[in-house]
Length: 232
Image (cartoon, rainbow, N blue to C red):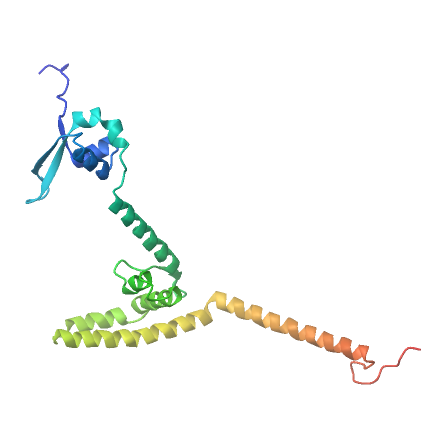
């Protein structure tokens, strides 16, 4: 082959390649196949032993590209799923809080049971947020993880281990709650709030005394308790 020869044009490409190169979505390609606009071949998947892959005719895609791009980018099912994902993300954002001990952001994990309960509306947001924070403190700031590792190493029946896990969880939950109460009391924010409260109390006492002095003077009584001479 001479150096001036053009490379052979590809006739067929994998569906994922077509999607990437032509800027199409899976829903648009599948709609084009259903409408008979593009030819498709089923072939063994090169990455999975027993899987299948699909080759799409490139010339068909190029010929009907504008028509294919006009198809909806998402199926009805995909649109509904996106709505659900968006709702779940909004809920995770609402449940996010900050640990007063380490300052770390606390978010519901993927397998969080309390998140699912909150999503179903079985638990209110404040209760769910508190449970997530307690769980974070239990794992990150107590000996709970160490205790769980010890239980795992024990040669006892599984149902016994489950009971031991639950007992450890209750025990370290109590410790986590105590730590949170102490952190809220000792935190700089709490200290500032305490100082502000004391200052408000001090100022209110001063105003109260000043008010009393003014009232006494209005009634003709001196601060020392003796009657003031009335002005003639």
